[in-house]
Amino acid sequence: MTIDPTPAPRGPRADTDTPTGAGPRAGRREWTGLAVLALPTLVLALDMSVLHLASPQLGADLGPTGSELLWIMDIYGFMIAGFLITMGTLGDRIGRRRLLLIGAFVFGVASLLAAYATSPLALILGRALLGVAGATLAPSTLSLISNMFKDAGQRAVAISVWISCFMAGMGIGPVVGGVLLEWFWWGSVFLPAVPVMVLLLVVGPKVLPEYRTRDAGRPDPTSVALSLAGILPTVYGLKRAAEDGFGPAPVVAIVAGAVFVVLFVRRQFRLDEPLLDLGLFGDRSFRAALLIILVSTAAGGGLYLFATQYLQLVAALPPLTAGLWLIPTAVASAAGSLVAPSLARRSRPGHVVAGGLAVAVAGYLTMAVAVAGADSGPVLVATGITLVFFGAGPMTALSTDLVVGSVPPRRAGSAASMSETATELGISLGVAVLGSLGTAVYRGRIEGSLPEGVPADAVRHTEDTLAGATAAARELPAAVGDRLLETGREAFTAGMNIAALVGAALVAALAVVSARALGHVRPTGAAPPQAEPSGEHARGPATPGPATRTPGARTSDPDPGPGAVRDPDGSGPLKG
Image 1: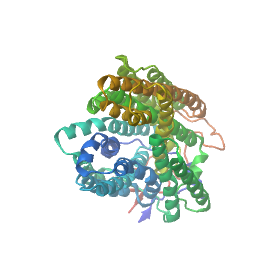
Image 2 (image 1 turned 45 degrees about the vertical axis):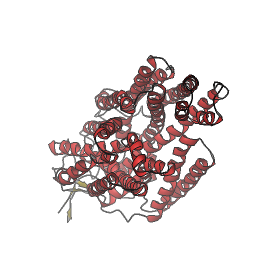
Image 3 (image 1 turned 135 degrees about the vertical axis):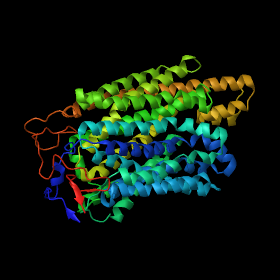
Image 4 (image 1 turned 60 degrees about the vertical axis):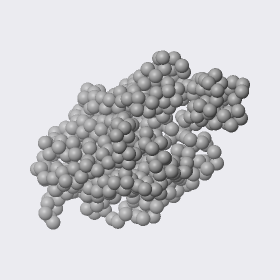
């Protein structure tokens, strides 16, 4: 194998000076590759929510205990969150297309295992394997997009399409699950992934180029173990806190995870080839974009949970009908993501993100005025959460673009994994914190306000959750049960209102942070100033002008074809 003669930058951190915005415009092969990458992204997101409607049939067929059912529902997200960093960095080392195809094969096999599981343990193992395979798909697809689309404007559009598919998958998951369950058994919800992965395995090698860092060392097993020991207990503790409050077990899990995260960080600073390059946080755009993703997804994830519960438990809509009410959420998120690149060409990305978050604030405030028992309640909640996701669309698309666009191509996989990890942790954090806040308000309103004649057992279930109140009301005389349910619904709605106000305050503050922290990033494709500021990188994803040339970066590489492997600095293909 002979290396392209263009000299690569030398020195331990020379690669950080190679802008990812430089390079030729993508052609038909790259856009075809984007369509191929969009499909596994859609399936990956769909699998996060498609199983929720199947839990009653699953429970009747397999007979899992309460603990086993929780693991069946949660293990997929646990494994994705835990392995994202490992898989993102592994893709940089062994090849991003190779890791994507390996993950697609395993995901297809795991889908079949889960679909035809005959015991709770088999289903838990199948879902765990799905999560590990899923952790290869998100960073691989996103980092490949970053490498395939060198032009900053085209990359922004491609990432927006990727984000739109991800959000659409989450939005249509309950609907797809509901339709399949009308005609087939519970395991059928896993089968749509199989033909998609087969298509990826057949077409992917023909249209997707390979990128890897040739001089990377071997993965550090200790770092992998520490990253898992840090992330998995943290996500587990946050999920348990969302269900049971911040009791001893969730707090111990979160603290233990934090300790291992500290140990992981210390080890990365000591390694010549760290699993996670913490030097990426030296870029101001990178830091700000990750913070925006974390906080915004925390607020949105927490309120989305309230919206789904309100429609089913307060408005008493059937699960499939509630899913249909939430379809506009997925459409709005996709629309917000797709409109972001054109706006970012006319205005600074930080201002576009801030404007979108302002729209999201309006959505939170709309949810804050919804009341129980009113015909307008479902309309306000569905409209509010739709505005939230529409406003978050530019944030998700542009912040993700800033994360992967502010690093050199050889580190795109690591950056993509951090973006996805911030999203996963944000959702878990939002569900835990805002869910706990709503639960506290709910229990405060319930205490002392229940009607007379309610048995002690029903009181205990009602004081726990609205779902418990709904189940208890079915066992009581109609008059008492109706008053109990009305009290529970009003208390739950009050908790949702408070959580929405907190979400509005957080996102409003985040809009100000976005405008200030990302205000230095120029509109996409804008020509850079004559002198770049020293110190932290301030260029963001903007495309350098024709006079800008970085050592080792060619301005017009020939098309290397789908099987080419990129040079470590992303400047050209490896030939051979």
